[in-house]
Image (cartoon, rainbow, N blue to C red; front, side, top):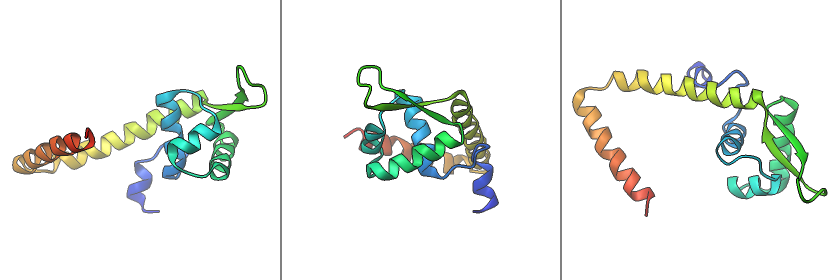
Length: 123
């Protein structure tokens, strides 16, 4: 992995897929592994492996479902919350630095393209 990419990640240096799980939990709250797999469009066994890895790192915990004792839900730990915040902080710093190197014209082009992308995504 390049040094540049590593500088944009948090302390755990997670692969994008695992960091994506943390951000989903951060945004949506606790979820079952099956719901996480569906959300991330991966097979349940793959999600189970990823969740187990994150649990071993102390970034998530698996707890008993509130109403169905046969199921578990996955939720972020305080360490997981810190990992999300630190990775976002590093990525924001990297992007700010990159944007500062653009000319005024380039920033205007980027702003226009951003508006188009938002419009397309809203369809």
